Structures are given as structure tokens and as C-alpha cells.
Image (cartoon, rainbow, N blue to C red; front, side, top):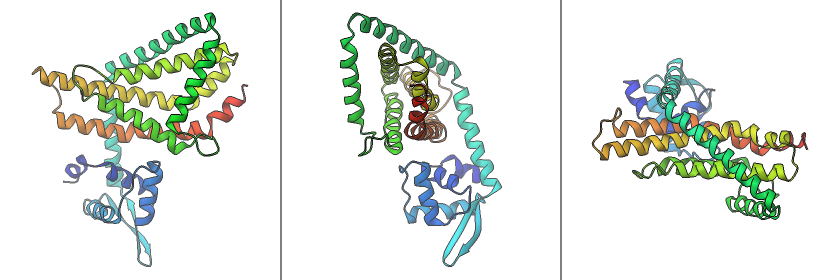
Length: 289
């Protein structure tokens, strides 16, 4: 019975369970869920206590004391085992798409390298292009509003921008035949290649360039590649259905797998990337300049 309930978990349910890895009362659970989701998940009292009652009935959480009118809850071993099972299921879903993920990764790296070579050649012929490019990059970053009033990168805004980009990449998969998730990945690979070429032509040491990209990039780029792979999987599944070809997963099951993988894999990677880019990447890069 509990497993059947757990198969229909929403994002709110995931974040509540994650918040209950430590004993917390209702208000603290809501606050922790907002913190984990970088402010994206707001859970009202009515929804929260309805879900807490459901989890307690299924032995997924238990009471853990109280103070006055406040009642504290904590996830049980049974609930923790089920949460781990969800992570294993999400990873198993990705392992089943290893060939597509490898193809997406190779195309991303090849596209970035090809763009970097082309941009290096163009900058060698006309160095003035670098200044124009950097102005355009600055305008693009300003349009995303990822910096606070002081000009410093804001982790929450970075997370929202990257979440939006990953979400759009996945949703593009809903358009059949066009395989639109390829385009956001191509755009990101191209932008990475062009900016890298410009930085090197400006005399920035390769170590400094790597230090400005890798600390957060090791989390952000995999999240992008996974989102692209899921978007292509979604598109390919719809195409096969239109053509009346056999599909291993019913559409509703596939959508559930895509959402679960987004919540349990992509969002944590994006959250880590945002925090590191806002607070860690800059100081590390400055060591090499």
C-alpha cells in the first residue's frame, strides 16, 4: 500500500521527506523545503498537514516529540528506505538511456570544441570581434538578472535561470519530430566555446579559464545533458507513438520517470552549481589570475 502511494509522489512530497531527515515541526518543515528548493517550493499549512498525516499512516514518518502545541516529525527507516529506492529508480532510468546520454555528451563536447576553433580563427582575423562579443555576453547576463543590486551573482537567481533553461529543454521534447531539445544544448555548447576562445585570445591563462568554469560546471553541465537526454527521450517516445511503433513504457509512466529524475537528480545538481558559482568559483578563479 505504501509503495503504491509513493509512486504518485509530487515535488512537495519529496521535499517534505527530505526536510524530515532531521526532526522538525510544521513551520520548520515548510522553511526547510523552501531552503532545499532554493525558494521555489512553498507548501501551505493545509497541504502540509494533509501530507504529514498520509505519511504517518503509511509509517513513512513518525512523531519525534514536541514543544507546547508544536509537534515534531522525522522520517522513519521505512520512509528513508523508500526515498532511497526512488533515487535508485531515477538512476536506473538514466542508466537505461546511457547510449543517448553518451551521444548527447559527445555532441555537446564536439559542438563546443568546433565553435571554439571557429571563434579562435575569427578573433585572430579581427580582434575587435572580442569586444563586441563580450558586450553581447554582458547584455545577455544582464537580461537574465542573475546578479543582485551590488552586482554580485545571486545563487537563488542563478538556480532559477538554470532551472528554467533545463525545464524548457525537457518541455521542448513534447514537440514531435523536430527534436528541439538539441537546440538549447547546441546554444550552450556554442556559447561555452566562443567565450572560452575569447578569454584565451584576451590572454587569460588556461588554468584561470578552467577555474572559472569547472567548479560549478561539473554540476551544471551534467544537469543540462541529463535534461537534454530526457527531452530527446520524451520526443522520441511521442514520435514512436505517432508512427504506431512499440514503446517500452506507457506515456504516463515515462512522464512520471522524467519528473522523478528532474526532482531527484537535475534539481540538486542545479542547486549545487548555483551555490558554487555564486560563492566559490570567483575566489578560486582569482587565485590563477
